[in-house]
Image 1 (cartoon, rainbow, N blue to C red):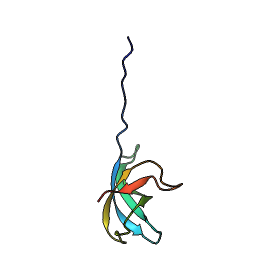
Image 2 (image 1 turned 90 degrees about the vertical axis):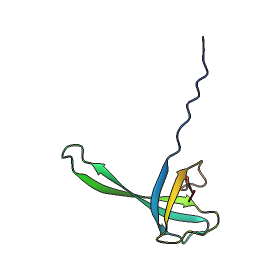
Image 3 (image 1 turned 90 degrees about the horizontal axis):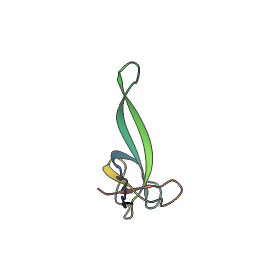
Length: 83
């Protein structure tokens, strides 16, 4: 007997700081996280930049924002600002 099980992928929500707002309707968000070294066990910071869609162009450099994963909007943009 076959059962229909739909697996929904949870969309990741990331929190970061806006480091670029020069593009139209796009901001660059730097997300920093702590990672434990596999061998030595020390925690260290790893940061990555994401381009996010900002429809109203209301976020400026230095603002703290939350971004959520969405369908690809352009070649680089796969996130949208939620707050």
